Amino acid sequence: MHIDPTPEEVASKLIISGIHLDLTDALKRIVSDKVARLLRHEPRIVRVRIDLEQDKTRRHGDQFVAKGHIEIGGPDLIASVTSEDAYKSIDLLVDKLDAALRRRHSEMKEKRHHPH
Picture 1 (cartoon, rainbow, N blue to C red):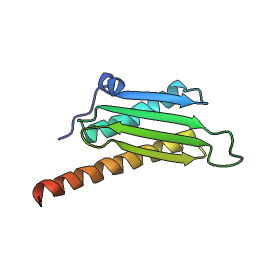
Picture 2: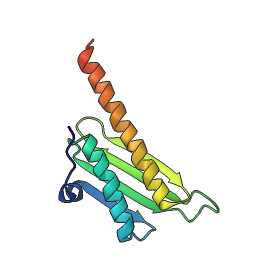
Picture 3: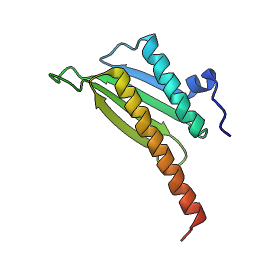
Picture 4: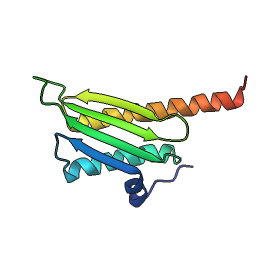
């Protein structure tokens, strides 16, 4: 049974920063909602850092870079995604971090059940 984290709990574990980009309330709210999903899966997460960057040096297409860093017991999880839309970048990044958390969990479970 997974318990939904409270907004205060999410806020205490989340760091959002915008690089060459003004973070609107809507962007902050979307990131907060998405990170709550990660915290629901893995409550032992210490901190989640999300960096949103607008790369204006690219001519067309992939301008928004979303970088995520999850601090958790053991090795930290780091991911990066680039797309043409900030919201799409956030979605893709959270999906990637969620997959990394699931992969980490299954590897730990396998190691626990089949030690060398």
